[in-house]
Length: 175
Image (cartoon, rainbow, N blue to C red):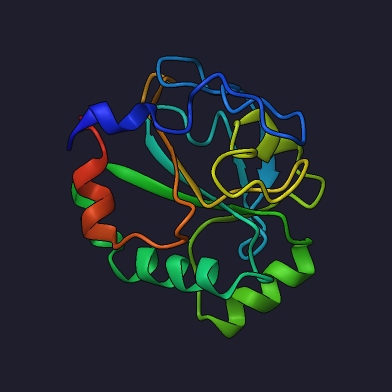
């Protein structure tokens, strides 16, 4: 992967909604958090993900068909990410019940966190990028956090689509 692309979306510009896109730039430490996988009921948090490379996919979720199709493609090609030692976690602005319904509709089984208030999304700096969906609303963003808890990639995709293979090529290699 080409890590020079990893700084896109981590500029210091402030968008009209007042959210700084530099909240979680490459090289920073990812915030601690705790949530529940809406599908399995299992805890997803800083301690359960410790020692793993985690690729977070932040999106507005079920209200965005492109986002859900993106999640389907990630799941379909999950082996590509596993081969590169990455765990996928999807975070959306849906309520838990809406996300479960959407997951069933799109046959998704990825680890998923509902973030209806946008607090986790905002702490990860996945708002206010190219799409400017509004305060606390997720852009179509990918953030890769390595085993040490360091952000090694953070990019927004305003076009709302990237093939998993193209995404893998953008990501820095992690052990």
